[in-house]
Length: 290
Image 1 (cartoon, rainbow, N blue to C red):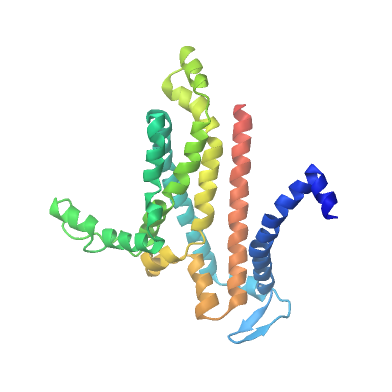
Image 2: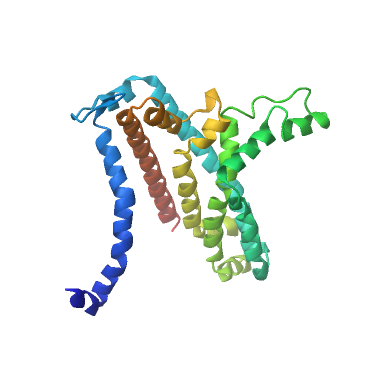
């Protein structure tokens, strides 16, 4: 059996793929399967009832707080994605088209510097920056632009969006940069030689060809932000809690794992549907331009 597997190219390929496949199956598929099963059970603090029921999903539909948290989470994730990608694209474009090749690695190195510090430290630093007596308020007071400290920049949704946008900026810059680097520069030169302006060259050539990087950046930012509960917990205050905070509360504080699992499944289905819809719309747009 072993000799047959190693004697053919397909068998050797299967052997190479098998370890990561089973690794992913053990660490991803099995936990997701367990969460899915839990969502159809019930729990009364310490007593777990494994009888199949849809009560958890029924409770999610009946109680408006869960719908409100899910809508707020999707809104925050959408805002974070839009802000991050819109700010990341000019940076990636500048590094790809205006930085000399021998210095691009240095710029990429500088972009990844935030990863050198702990995520929690970065969140706490934003608390210092956006606080009532923080850097932003102190600076604005000193130059006379405001008469009293701003209160809408911390412990609310705005603070969550700002912090998450900063945290996920490198994740958006890098895939966009890779897509821009793959663009054949001769296409841009040919377009301008034919009389096309730089702006229309960007719209008709650079932007469509960079779309795979943009799609990757959107998905990389949108999908994990909706499941982030640390930033809303530390920066959101009472009005900035997201669905992930409710899931964490159900699992740890209220000891109601089945309801928390059902909330996680609903959030995951919403994210999946939106992500697939975005990908399909992007493909249709690219085919329409082609």
